[in-house]
Length: 254
Image (tube, rainbow, N blue to C red):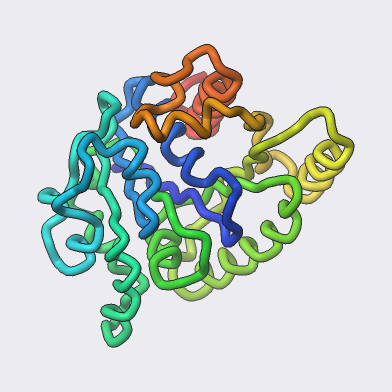
């Protein structure tokens, strides 16, 4: 059965989608069967990795009852499939308002295909609305990207949300890792924040940090992962290192 992981933070601008897309690509390049679910109506992950200009079938269709097998599409990366999103998905919370168990729609619709993948990654929007809660209910674990300027505040909010979801909806949910992004080793603030996170969360904090890197910002425009667009860049090296660290945590490599 697939390991289901949501990339989640209530704060925006923390490289959440960058992490989701490039970690998914990194895992696929290591021979894993990966599905990336874009649950953000901004559809940035889809813009990055979906091969066409506009998907005819999207996650909105999935939430409206279309079989999941009809929505999954190959991405631009070999071995990586994608469920794309669209701007129209932003209305789904209104459509789900009167539905029973609306927080667990995604968990239920994933059941038929869990055996087809090693990892299912879910990219989310920065909020605590019904769709991010769906991702938390469906997931085994959460990877939380944080930027140094908002790291402590974001972690406090995320821990509170995760505890509520664990108590009410998904008791097995755990924090799989905290990832410092746009990390600048030259600043005292970055080092102080990393030390404080390490003291509070210990080994949950990834050793890998993701630096500021212009190539990471450029690659979505070219519909490529960082590994395809700029394989020698600092961003590619960092996400390759993160992929290896994640796989070690999951017992996939020694």
